[in-house]
View 1 (cartoon, helix red, strand yellow):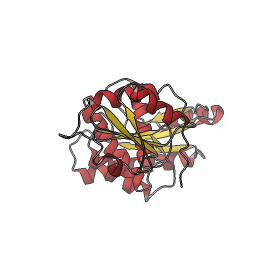
View 2 (tube, one colour; view 1 turned 30 degrees about the vertical axis):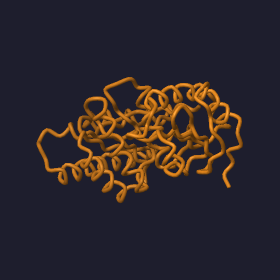
View 3 (cartoon, helix red, strand yellow; view 1 turned 45 degrees about the horizontal axis):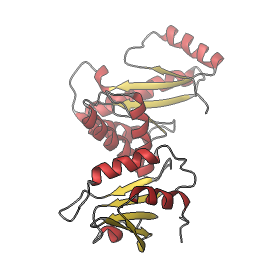
View 4 (cartoon, one colour; view 1 turned 30 degrees about the horizontal axis):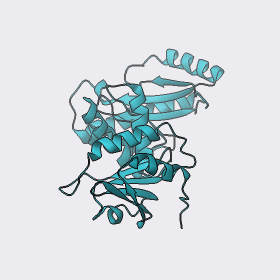
Length: 262
């Protein structure tokens, strides 16, 4: 793993030209990357979303010109707002005006679940449009969770692969097991296994009526019935697993089976 030296400079509060030149000089010597980072909260006046987005872009580009004048180009740019739409608009505008790497994120996102939703929308929409090279999920929570959410975003968009995806249903009246508990327990067991030889998509479905069909994209899966579960691979039913040691049997199939794609 390579740790990149990264220094963030905020054009809204760094105005001393001589001081900036001194920072650039040191950055060159230390081979340090500079991120030109602007947060919407740095503007003192209330602005419309469109005006705010354009002002963020304008200030970033002006600062980049200053860096380029000093022959410094080891640069990335981040434009972040606590408002998802402002963040998206600012980065869309920026992407048309510069070729420097864009650092994505939504800032000051609020409480845990709200922060996840804002981050997933803001970062995910831009990545799906081909905008963005670096990302940072910002949560009022453990930074380990920020990394996990970032991985989930990249994997959901098929930009990176980190670990098997679990496909599971929201349950219905046909469900006869505690599916939430089963899925959580299975995920915990899966986290301790190496993902290199595991199937990419694993399904755990609440009923055997629709389960195999709804989760046919999975490499392997189970669908629960009354004191049993149907084991299926790529939508085709393979055999029935009995209630005793069901999860253990399924884990063996997941770890040892042939999951190659047709």
